[in-house]
Image (tube, rainbow, N blue to C red; front, side, top):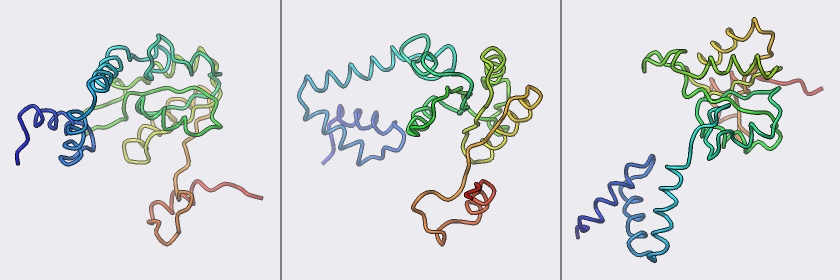
Length: 197
């Protein structure tokens, strides 16, 4: 049995979301059609509100509904964690013991995608470091070619400023058996080792 045209259009809309295949999109579409009208209206209003009221923080570049996000308003800028995208802030915030601020680059260096230093918010980072008397910059970009290149570029740029530049450690995750770790992961784990006694 084929779905009606409105349901197929709704399925197509859900399929446009990242990671949503046809079956999941179809389930979402059926849920919306079967749901109470007030529930559907609330969903639609929440989507529109999130889209129209979300903007970028004037300081760090993260998502907010105000001019300056709550993190920039309430935390000390002596430590800045540099991430590629606003969504990375939510991931880093799961670490409960980080009390610094963030700086969103808007991507990573990628020659294949014609994205160079001028396409990222690196000038804004330099300005923040100088005005906020930052002591440490933690680069938390993905451990891939682009993320590593971006980290190295930032470290080289900041070294004359006397700011400590660190990179998040990479390696074996908690609960992983060593026999299942690949050689690159183990190599990174050895490089990022810490002193325990």
